[in-house]
Image (cartoon, rainbow, N blue to C red; front, side, top):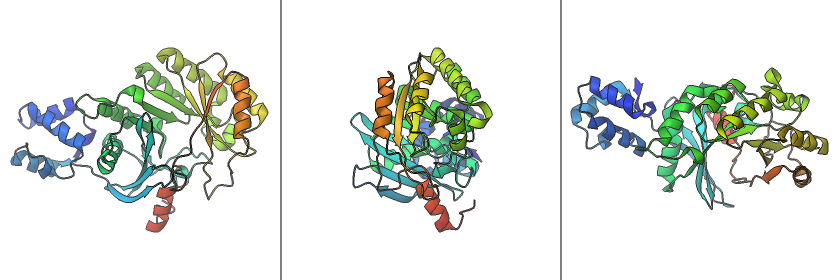
Length: 345
């Protein structure tokens, strides 16, 4: 069955034209889909005969809230959505002075194997469709009653490992007839898939690219992130320089601070050397402890930050939001998988 929410307006128009429907029906249908209707009969300005055909031949995605946790500390909301096939994904709503940000997942599980992340513990089950990624924005907005102004693709999964669906999602969420969230209000995080970073650079989308670096040397990064074994830090940084040259957009380098692993002064010096001559920004992340991992949060975040600043690097320390509600990627899904008896899936 055709999943309508993943279709661009011109594709909806082609579908309905083949069904001998007038052109304006495609605009009506697109707007209904963007509003997050859950039943065909909610599309009240479409003829009953068209709704019946849509129901017979097309899929209308609508995730349901399996669990919802609200932080008593800062109001962060974490959703565990149940999808049509029984799988679960996570979405986080965060409140900032500049607006509301939603962190969305791009895959069910993840194949990247980063040792500090709960999302990857059971591997990747499947890619999310563009419509399923879009649903997280639409239904978070609908459930919370709060307008979403910013999106980060930093939830479960590696966005660039799901290239086609993620790019289509970006087109859909940016569309003037839809949510119309500007590219400069969207951040995409990657562990460093270099071919896809080059493809993204060629599109010049003006979104913010966040690279999960987490170590400045191959020995440490390869232990933390298996993806590094294929290319290495130097090749990744060369790719990032090309991205900056093509887009003019400053890259944010994510760096999870892990006690005794990547938080030494020599690693801060090495990181500063890697960033010399480019407009990069380092975002230090206090590690969220994962029960299944022996890694612990660093006790040297402030010293590491000061060391980088002394070398002329722009550094921020990420606020820890939702620390009382399993806000780290994959934790809530992992618990639900165990409850469902699907731990090894």
